[in-house]
Each structure stands twice: as C-alpha cells, then as structure tokens.
Image (cartoon, rainbow, N blue to C red; front, side, top):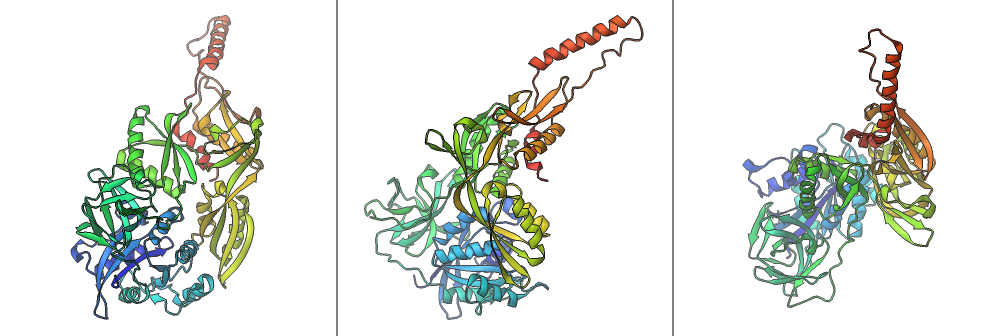
Length: 597
C-alpha cells in the first residue's frame, strides 16, 4: 500500500486535463506508442468531437520513480464543465490527492475555483500544475500570484508543464509520488469499498467502479450493498489499464471494478458502500450527496410510432448516467413523451445528441424548466417541474424558485457589459474582487431559471469569449412569478406554457407570439394567438386567413353569381373556423429558445 497513489485531475474546461492524462499514459507505457491517440480516456465520440470530458474515467499506471521504487498510480480524469460537477465530486471521494491544472494563458477561471474548493472540502493534497507554458501568451508568474491570492495555496512549488509537447510532465509524476499520501487502511479488516461510479453492460450486467478502503474482494465472495442489503456473488474483479483487465483480487488502497451479476443499476447507487455478506459493517463510508436534476424538459418523438423506441433508448441511457431521470407524460399538442431531468443545458444537449446518434431518434424538446415550490392556500406545498401541471391561479398562495450564487471571472474591460447582462437576468449584486489589476471576480445571486437558457452564451458574447462563470445552488426564495398560457384559437397549448417573473410577462409573451406567428403557417381561416394569465389575455396576434380566389372562373356574367360564390365561401370559412384544427410545426416549440436572440 505504501507504493499506491490515488489521484484525480481537476481543472476548468479546456485547460488540458485529458492531454496531461495522455502524456502520463505515454510516459508510463500504459498504452503502447502505436495505439496512442489524442484524448485516450474520452471514450465517447461526442467527447472527442467537442473536446470535452463528460464521464470521469479511471486508469491504472505503473511508474518507476527516481528513488528506484515502482509505484502504482490510480488516476481519474474528470470533466471540467459546471454541469458535470457531480462526476468530479464522486471521483474525489476515491482519491487522496488532486492535480489542479491551470492554463498559463487564461489563469484561474470559475470552475478552477469551484474544483479547488471541492478538493479542499474532500481533504485532498492539491498539487498546482500550470499548463500550456509553450504558448507565446503564457504568463506563469501572473498565474502563480493568482493561485496564492485567490486560492490561498502555496504557489512557489507550482509545476510548469506543457502537456502537448511533454515538457515538465515527468516532474509532475515525481511530485505525485512525493507529495500525495499513500492510502490508509488494512487489508486484513472486513471489506469496506466505496462505489464511485457504475456502468451497464448488456452482457455482464452492472459493472461497479469501486475504491477499496479496507479488506479485499475476489471472485466467489458474497458481497452486500449497505443501503438496500442486497447480496450478490462476485464473478470478476480487475483494474483499468485503461481497458478492463481481470485480476485475482482487489485489496485495500486499490481502485478497480467488480462484476457480480447485478441486473439493475438502481441497486448500486453511487456513494454507497460494499461489504462482505458474512462480515457486515455497522456504519457506511461517508459518501457524498445524491445528485438531483435541476433542469427539466419534455422529449417527444416527431413520429408518434417511435414512442416505444424512445422509451427503450432512455432506459439504456439512464443505465450509464445515474444523474439523468425520466417519467412518462402526455401533451395535448405533442402526444406521448417523457419529462426528463438534467444537471444543466449542456447535459440536456448531450443526452439529446446521443439519442439522435446512437438510437436514430428525431425529437421535439419543450422549453427547459426548473423545479418550483408552490404553496397552496390549503397550507400544503408541492414541487412542480412542468408549467402545464401548475394549479389554478386562485389556489396559489406563493411560488418559490431556486436561486444560485454565480461567480464570473472577467477581464476588467468587460465588467460593465457583464453587469448589464446579469441585471437583465434579475441578478442581485454581492461583491466584486480584483484578482489582479486586469481581471475581476464578480459575485451575484441569480434565479436558476434565468441562467439555464442563454446566460452562458451572453456572458461569452459580451466578453468576446474571455469571461467564465460557475454557479452553485443556494436554496429557494419566494418570487413574484406567473404562469402564462398560450392559446391558439381559444385552446390552450400545454407544451407552450411557461413561468415568468411578472415584470417580464408582457414583454416575453409579445416576443413569443411574434415568433409563433412566423412559424405557424397560414390557414384558410383566421388563427388567433393569445397569451393569457389565468382568464386575462395580456397579448394577442392574428395570423390572417389565406384567401382562395373563388371568382377566378367567373369571366363576366351576372354579378349575383359572384355574390353567391362569395357567400358560399363565407359560410365555408365560418364552418371551418368552428371545426378546423391548426397543426403546429415542430420548430414552433423552439420559438421560446429564440426570443432572447
């Protein structure tokens, strides 16, 4: 155990975590040179295309250090985007140390700060690594000052590397061996293992990723899950090199996988404890809080007969992504679909893309929403994630919405435009600190519903891509919110309902109706578009009828014949208005996403 080191790599998105992991695999010869590709640990095509890490990926390396000893290094590469923070926190629970990678050109950014705080909370040994020193605009001295002033870490021993060309990477491996403590625990104690991830394999069932804290586990052992007391027989254990490699046993301090004929991924909750059935534990390992979705939207198949295929696809995706949830729902306008829960807009985008690529499904996604807490006049409080399910306005006492604390890092010249964006999003100013003479850190409190749609795009746009932001939830607050219904020819369309602050209700309703007017084709009768709060209509647009020229065939003759044809058309239009239905095209449901452009 003295020669084992468990560590993760944490950083802001695009600061070079995956590239550094590639260099480690290359130097330790874990992967032969002929098989090396960029982003080895990013297993999904979508990760490689977008250049982002979505799933935390473990790998085991053997390293011959300068002191002559051979060390086992268990690395977990983690995502850098705020939506996948749960992947980072669960990886930290399996480690004793963390490499905090910082871009030498960008300096400390929002997610750098958030990840550093997570590592401090997890009591990890943090090694700062300043990456991309080969770039002409690199300024390692400035970054060192930021590490000391913003993070409060000792920056003198920060390691200067270029993960791309390999400069200084060997020194990082030596620092890992010297500074990160070896795991504590006893191989002779009863088995105590933490589940830090789980994936589903159609042939092997659930594959549990575990960190062994005490004892050991081998093929044939009867294991028990602490939370549900279900028992399973171990069929295979092994380690990641980075592909799964079977091993005789996993012992205290090691990171590996366990296959035990587990059919349901719900039986292996991330953060749970594994123990031996004949030697049960009195207390579980301190896991981390179960992640809850914060953004909800409806997924509906464009072809109605694709519903069973969508249900099966969502089931398969959930097996590999415990943070994703779905429940069936029915919409008058869109038919049968599912209400899906995500950790953020990027998470939603990734799931939608995977459904399209891996399962060939074309979907309509409704407007994303957050969870609201609605207090009723009878004294009860209900949680609602779908505007269509809101109780009538007369029964509501109050509505609470989730708030977040947002940290924005920006060059000082963009402070004004960013403040304007935040104020338009109902942000409350908390403080501003200068990280150095040219960069500032702004802290605001903003409703979650205001940042899930286009906040990221607007911050990047007004700062020419230089600003970055991170957010954390800080609880619920009562707000003056209203539910706006969209009516088409007097009939409410549930999929177009939305929740909005009362100050923005009229403005947003008008913009949405204007967009709908562009997308809904003209009919042979007038189509009335209305936005209403309860029974009160606050905005209206009319799509004028197409006029068929019924007089085209009359080339003269008595005027009474023309009048007769026009009267007949008038009667037909009157009848059609009563029984005619407006088919709403799919892009009309995306109109809400475009009203802020």
